[in-house]
Image (tube, rainbow, N blue to C red; front, side, top):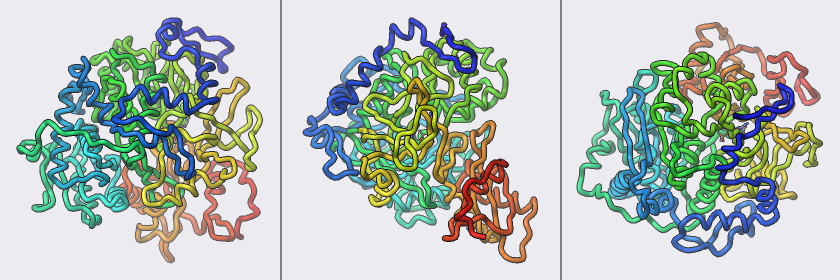
Length: 634
Ligand code: WTA
């Protein structure tokens, strides 16, 4: 049992002797010190746990900063480490995947079976002309074919761009065009809260707006009627039944720095940015963090209850766990369908050892009360994880005591789409403070600085920076290297630091408390959105002349979107219009972007140069001091 020291409210949770005894890493301080003194040595050691077709020449190359290279000269393919190498060992027959659909259907796959599916799909993609370097867009529900298609693209040297299945027409069309995708892989639909999500219709509408698309492959999941175009659309199962879909396929030899995937994420402008991750450094970083932070053992059943459409799903649902030879749990649907014990039932049924999810999910399930988890034997759980937003101590304690039975340390991992993997995180041996992501991972140097880039004192809030590049960091923004430089590296060019976009403080014990975004990025239920994206959806509504979107604290979602609209001359806002505007935003971007509240205003607070001062709107809404208003236009 965890023993709690210090007084309540400032409690320090110590791991049990059992956890410490079995931990993959026992001495954080010592290894951290070594990793900072000689990061290249540390990363080379981590890299040598993987199989390389050809060893790298240099571990780290910063000759073209900020376009850093890791393991340059090395030849590798992430699929070789995630699948191929396991086939030569007993893991061939180990379960790679346990999947449960929302209606209750179950599929399992050994590494051997996964390899066959991936190889068949790879051959299907090849037959559709998919080539090395090309980007295939994937838009799917959480079904095994999503992971299979990702791996199949990568196996033949193509890259993928997974678009979250909760995104709608506009968002999908934008991302397809930005990636210049010729091939889209989708599904007829998926199950969510007992209903079919009609992905194929959304995909069809998006393809109408995407001239680059030539081929669309559709997986049959829900079997409802969908529209297929004659010379564009193919059913996945038809293609998989053809002789071309042979179960053997060479894995393409790639350079360390070849593109693995792009993943679009929101930034401060309306256009989402496609962050580019590469084969070598990304797999070293994600597998190292996963193995050490979650203390991965061969007998573990790992459940990352995220969506593969976001970075958490890419790194810790698909790539890192497979590289570490773990059995991965995947679930299609809503956590509370048909009842709020759905997750706890699956933890018990499959004997899940590690559960990694978001504070929003924890808060959402907490709301239903303890009776739901209490019905189940959750004793298989050994470690818990949290990601996506700060976890409030109340949710932390519930997760710890009710779900983890007071014996499972919670790994609160701070990281970003840009970093590829965990940057600030405890290890199982770290004494925990609820709400703090604790300390930097090995090889990661962080700073908390003021406006002038000067380190702030313990306890003071400042901007979070990363002082040295790490192997898992995105290499660029697809098609826009200047924006990459501008967004992340320009502000601290002299120091060579990476700007995270978050604010944080460090307490006297060196524990880091991440507070939240300080730019125009919003985290709603842990999902990342840009105010600019929401605003451009708002002004695409015919009645709206100008709009601003801000995030306000929300008990369940962490943040909720509130929007302010100026209507075109002569129009008046009312409840009906507000409802229509909400629906419009949801149709354009996706239900996650649906505004919580729509307010109608005569004017928006702006600077003299015409920039909307969102912080003023926020301060007014929250009834706090509006701060410096000297730049505010009359
Ligand atoms: C926030 C998600 C506090 C943060 C992996 C970051 C967190 C943004 C945490 C990146 C955490 C993520 N504690 N805040 N443990 N994890 N964040 O790109 O604001 O979707 O900048 O990556 O999520 O969101 P993204």
